[in-house]
Length: 303
Image 1 (cartoon, rainbow, N blue to C red):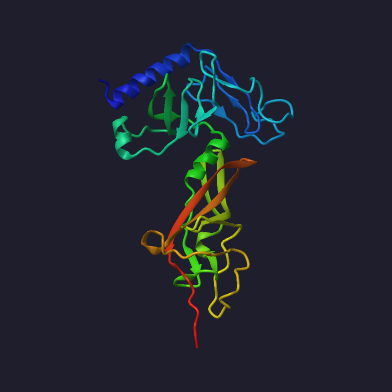
Image 2 (image 1 turned 90 degrees about the vertical axis):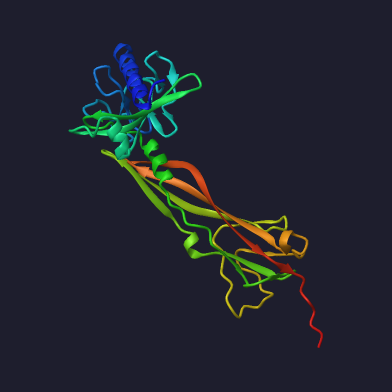
């Protein structure tokens, strides 16, 4: 059985052999710039040039068309088979494997023979087979290839630190049947957040913006609000409804487990990105918070 290091060395040997005997691979440009691979390039990964739309992506390239030069707009492995240009946040290399910048631990670097000298960078390489995936960390000497801004956008998205959902359900204490409850989130739970991912030559920032809060009230009703809601203020008429986010319970929680309703709030975030003169969107995110509340029948006061 091969150890992780020996298996990686064997994989690297096979990948290098495929790269040497395989044909030169060219990828077309497009909205994210040109991509070009060459059999004369010792690095087993393509150059992905984050060109500006409407300008040549390759330095010295002719013409004023949008995007890169050459190719058919598809990514192919050395055998000529079409493969996805991106997979699990990594970019396709000319050897048919996928590469993503990584920051290995000191133990991993030591197991791979130590930190090489000179310019270069560490990359996670994954090679997919029939229902399996092999790979590992590899050092690539020289200037690191410029990866697709879309790949960096997904890495930046993964770095987003979204706030916890803190629920401010008012008036404080138990809720009463047929009286409005004001639904609000702590101000720290609502607001834009951003994170950046970069490699030499390209920096992409992902920005998450909350767009709605969905309140599952525990009584079978879901309330959707376009903002964090307005906090209830002391002295407010108990019969006054919230101006933007509220709910009226029509039955008590006496029959629910523990005599309480479980209120769950899900905040939906839209995520956009910008960098290298380009922009776009990536799949959104959600954050969730939960509280329990007791809803009682209001009692008439007899004087």
